[in-house]
Image (cartoon, rainbow, N blue to C red; front, side):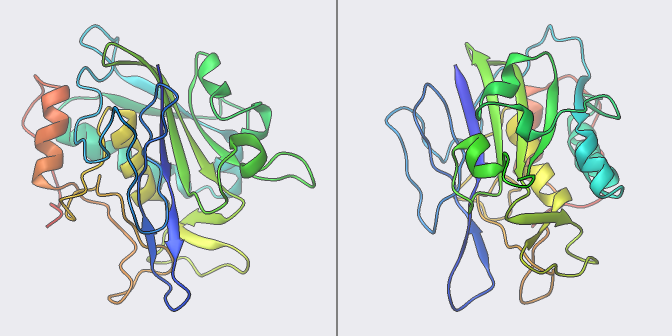
Length: 264
């Protein structure tokens, strides 16, 4: 079974605010994509499905799961690795044991090395990739078949509620990823907060679905982009109490959760 999670921000013509909404596309998958300001469902999966894969990576997996950061991402911005690592630490601390570990410098592939959206699932690597056009070659739309409005996509291969492989792909054609609290806006690109996006996508990577009814959840399928401000809060870097409860339902047996903040 293939599953995919997609971030799809939408910009109203009168506002800088983006909305990320998830929809389900049935290819025997779950999909947590995001489209304009409404939610679509297929006949099998509700987008308001807090736990999408109840077995996670399974009780017999030799944890931690190694996530490989594409060399391309690290070379573009050396600070991104620390932002992604913070998102990983947040989930590990909530679970109470080391479920995820990040590795850099090993995976030299980019999104342009894959023929289609699901091709990364064919290797033995759980990777984080940019899809970025190089000259007239590759790019987000060609590689994934997704709209340029989509921010990121997490794809899965699963069986009997247990994840077997997963990868995360980022739309680097339309967006530039960084720290929306400190980084400047960039011409011709939309600034997105990498720690926030990674935290959300890693939730899917671990088996969580979207939570439409809880705006405090990191799995709430809406996010703003652009510079963070009181009028445009574009960071979601903390888990809610329910996020912690749900992830510990999948990955149980750890020490008590260690959190530096709770999303209210």
